[in-house]
Amino acid sequence: MTDRADEFRKRAESCLALARIITDPVERAKLLTMAQRWYDLANEPIPDLNAVLEGFNEQQLTRPVAQQPQQQQQIQPKKDEKE
Image 1: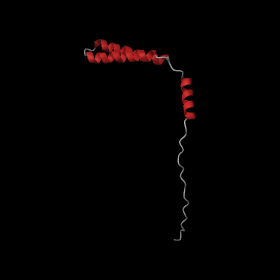
Image 2: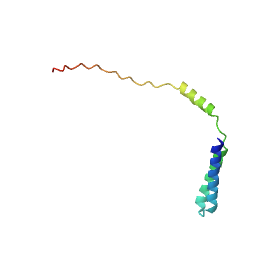
Image 3: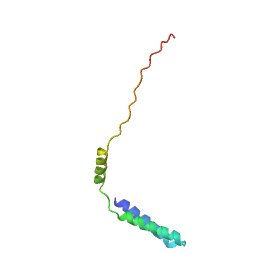
Image 4: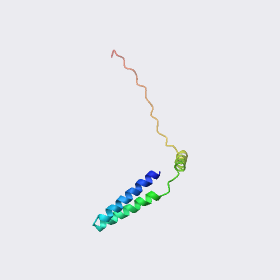
């Protein structure tokens, strides 16, 4: 998972590099906000995948299953070939 965090940090650095050279203050603010969000994502704790899966599976097991109506086939009388 460190590869993911490294990628997020690189994206943040790219945003900062662009923010240093851009002249529009509105766009600069957007880039700085985006850089901050990338850094936040890079530094978030990694959730325990097994705990997430266990919670999901438990939720699926306790959820009522919707019953699908069953279709019945009607037997059609055979047509004689002589008719």
